[in-house]
Image (cartoon, rainbow, N blue to C red):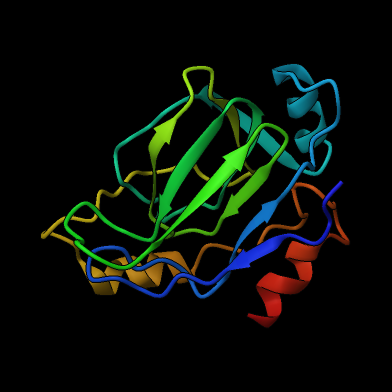
Length: 175
């Protein structure tokens, strides 16, 4: 199990504010056999709650009011992180695979660029956080109010992979 996550600091873009906290990717972190049920049980044990199952989502968007975590239990995808819909540059591409967990801090733009047909993940969110709201990162962005909203999202009480003492608890405080 990967308790030393990859860390990606994604600078703000014109249409995606992103976050000062790093995106965390835990490789091969999910318990075997990989399934929706096992992934759900594992991540919910760490005080995050399942709010859906998804596959390929090509729309660039971000959530200014909640952190988000994917538990990838099937397939693989190349994600674009850090670009709003109107951004032409910046951001990074990362590949995620079955067994990986990726944690996106509030405000981090994301979408799928390409995925295998069987790509599936559960979306989990810190317990008691509001239902996510989608922002697309277009010309009508109210930067000041979004920046304030993103910065007011509380740090989770538990790392979705490592629990109360997991890396997120250390990395999202010192970033």
